[in-house]
Image 1 (cartoon, one colour):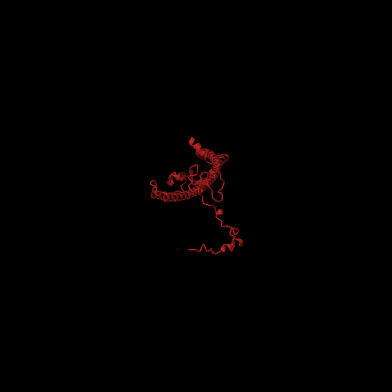
Image 2 (cartoon, helix red, strand yellow):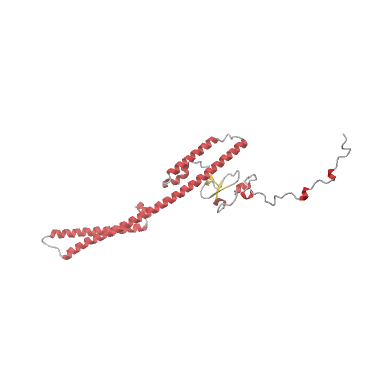
Length: 277
């Protein structure tokens, strides 16, 4: 009984009201039919010795007509209830489609951030290898194989689960990605929503959630996190605004005063003493 009550709380109130009205009409119609059948049988048994009066016949006929009217009302209520159910199904289908699109979009953004993070890690590994030599603790071929396998798993999962809403909540686990690599920002959570990349060459977090760094939208130009700003060896690429050519005023030719010939005193011949061998 408790389970039935809990299920009723999830049903639209208008549907419950019509269902109760339908139940009452059904009981009333059955009672009328039972009484009308009993009266008609009594009249039939009394024939031909006793014929029913017009009032008795009209009363029995009225009971049958009333039961027929109740049946028509019940049919109308049933049609209205069917319309309510169809509307609820349509709303659920729209919500299902909406949430599927949202989740697929989030997965696409997650894959984009993860792919960028993977390429950046490969670039860092290449820089470390060029500077210090191959690390004995890093198996690059294993890293590439593991990333390619993860990408293959993600693509297969997205193709097979686009319409499978009950399993969408397991998207992170089904991706088959290492939990350490899937966490970004100083909050150490997975990528979601709007994010911004730190331009610090050795940033330990790489990507940040906008709300975690107190930003409402992405700023123009380069952006560096507080952790990299505190480091003295932080290296960032110059912004596009700084990559400007020198203006025409700065490209001036030397003046005429600076283009003077050497004076006559400076054009002296060497003395006789200096010409001695």
